[in-house]
Image 1 (cartoon, helix red, strand yellow):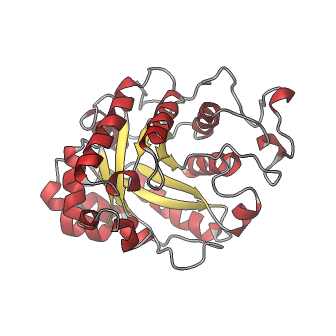
Image 2 (tube, helix red, strand yellow):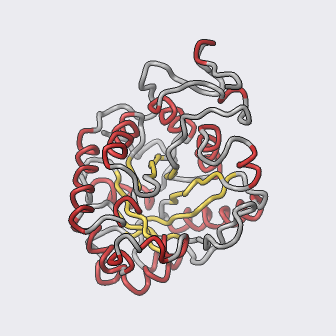
Length: 321
């Protein structure tokens, strides 16, 4: 897969760092495989129960190098304490915000815990920001994001947005995994200035609660292709979510790459496996990335391009079913 980094509105610093991640690590072919390791904050130690070794950041960083990931995402504390021993062998993405899972998600907000300047001082090649699209606290979220975006421009560092539909209003409008919510989140992230957008896999289930334009039957490929188009010039990463069947994940990975995504961001599906299993799974993922076709970015996959302004014909409308 060849995705040009040019004509995306990126400055020299961002281009340099993204090129390093895409072409000097992993498969070195312009695809991206990231290992997020922010679960200790977001979910607590319960995420380490399946594989206790994964509680150790040094184990995770070593695994990321051996599995040939393009980068690993760490919260500021683990980045400061642990990354130095691995610097130069695996690119660093510093997550700037994060929260615990303890409070209700009715009105979520992920507070800033680090600065872009701190990330740059640690040698990061990118920073990450969780944006809760649809939260009633979006005004606070957008304000914090604006400051991060401005600092990223100042320091020339790529901004990866974890675009997550969340909150009581999202739940009332089809749920956080609906195609409507995921597609909208990708667009919001792009509108606000993301360079790379991480999205979860959209559900194939339609709901009468979503806008009429989204009450359509689409293939997985067409939903992902539409999300890539909604993200515009921002590169798209598909998340693996919680531990799932390997065959299902590999199939989804292939669909995502053929639909125009630049790569994958898999955390729990790697870290909840033993070291040997994780290395084997990562090799399978990189095999999918190696086989990804060229020239597919943002195009239709099943011959049926979908967009809010260009819907399929009436035969694809699901109505209120």
